Structures are given as structure tokens and as C-alpha cells.
Length: 198
Image (cartoon, rainbow, N blue to C red):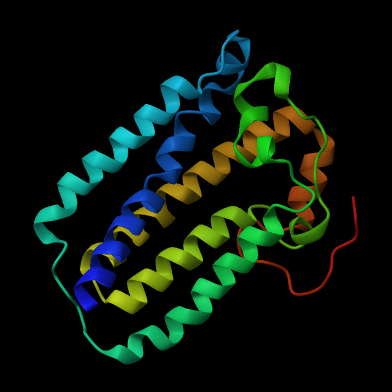
């Protein structure tokens, strides 16, 4: 059972750690993607899957290295898993599947120009990224695998750069509305108090 959990945790962290790299293919080139007639996803999704495979192959030789091993490590992991699931469910409210999938960024005909600042997004600008982080931390804490902690650190470093790129792209699309939103709502660590609706 422990081996299975460690393998699942390692592979989950592999996928999560490549999310910023996937968005690096989108945000700097958003206008170029929008000018295309066809959806770029037939190109982007295979490239993302190739990243999973490459990351799996690179980390495979050391995915058995355990920093600590105790069943108690799952105690703090469980609330993090729950927090991640809660954030995923809240992120889908007031947000279309197309928006969650990034279609406004890459497909001009599907572009939804409404800035969503209600619900969970009144407390945190990027709740999906926070959910990813909760899940990665949960797997890292629970398994105690060095590879999970390393991939989590990598995702935090690349994710912070990617969030800045996304903020620039959203500012270009929404202008002053997004600048005002950005000033009052934090990127990843949520506000405890409710913010005024923009």
C-alpha cells in the first residue's frame, strides 16, 4: 500500500509540476495563438503530455528516496487534500469550462471578456493554482518522498513566474479593471475578509 501511494504521489507531482510549463507555452504567445484559425490545443496538449513523460523519466532514478516514513505524515496531508478539492469545486463556480481550460487565452472566437471577481475569486485571484499547490504539498507531506518535495519547490518557483505572466496578459485584456482587482485581491494566499466587488 505504501509503495502504491508513493508511486501515485510521485506521478501526481510530476503532472502538477508541469502545469506552469504548459502555461508558459500560452501566456507569452497569447495574441499569436488567438490569431490562428484553429485551436492550438492539438499542438499544446501533446507537448504537455511529452513534458509528463520527460519529467517522469528524469525523476525515475531517484523517486524511491524517502526523507521520512511515518503513517502520521498523512494527518496534515488529509486537510490539504480536502482544501485542494474545496478550491477546485469553488473555482468552477461563476467560471465556464472554457475559461478553466484556458480557451479565452488561446482562441479568439471563444474569448470571454468578462472579468470574474465573485465567489472564491473575491478572495484569491488564482484559486486553481492554490488548489494545485495544496495537492502537491499533501502528496509531499504524506509520502515523504524527496522527489515530491523537489517537484513542489520547482512548481512554486516556475508558478510564481507564470502567475506574473498571466497577470500581464490579463491586464492587457481587461486594463484598469484588472489592475484594480490585482491591487485588492492577492494572487495565491487568500484574503480572510471579504473584498468589495469590483
